[in-house]
Length: 156
Image (cartoon, rainbow, N blue to C red; front, side, top):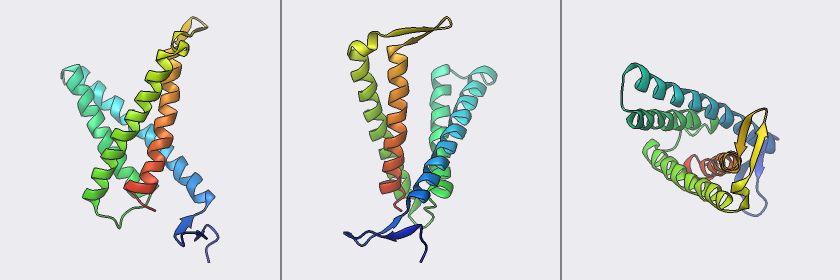
C-alpha cells in the first residue's frame, strides 16, 4: 500500500497524504506565478503593441490567464484527466467567482476599518492599509481557491 494515501476512517474515502497536498500547493503556487506573468504580458502586448483599449487588453489578459490556469491546474496540479472537462471548467469558473468574492469582502472589510487608514513609509515607498489588505486578500483567495479546486473542480 502506498504510504502517501489511505482510507479515511470515518468516510472510507481514499485521501491523499500531507506530502501530496504540499506538492499540490507548491505546484498551484508555480502555476499562479506563471499565470500572473502570462496575464501581465498579454495585457502589455495588447495595450502597447497592438494598441487595444486598456480595459479590453485587461479583459483579454485575464481571460487567457483563466484558461491557462484551468489547463495547468487540471493537468499538472490536480491530475484530473478523468473528469468531464466542461463540468470541470464550469466548476472552476464558479470557484473563481466565489473565491474572488470572498477575497473582495476581506479587502473591503479591512479597508473600511481603521486598518484601511494605515500608511507605512518604507524607504520612501508608502504601503497603505489598502495595499496590505489587498495582499491579505490575495492570500485568502489563493488558499480558498486551492481548497475549492481540490475538493470540487478537480475532485481528488
